[in-house]
Length: 51
Image 1: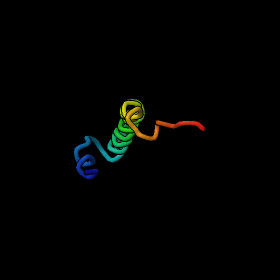
Image 2 (image 1 turned 60 degrees about the vertical axis):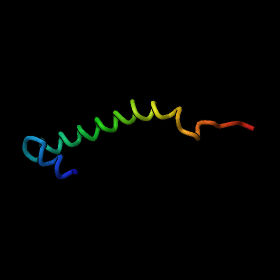
Image 3 (image 1 turned 90 degrees about the horizontal axis):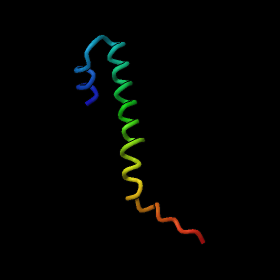
Image 4 (image 1 turned 180 degrees about the horizontal axis):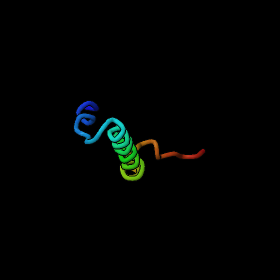
């Protein structure tokens, strides 16, 4: 999969490295700001009771 992405990115090695880094940052941002907050209420360990 990573090889396929690397082959399809345009430019030389430096440009591909920057684009790959931007893809990783975009994926992490999507997870942190969209996916994790959306799924947080659905997780079972949110039901914490104090004694």
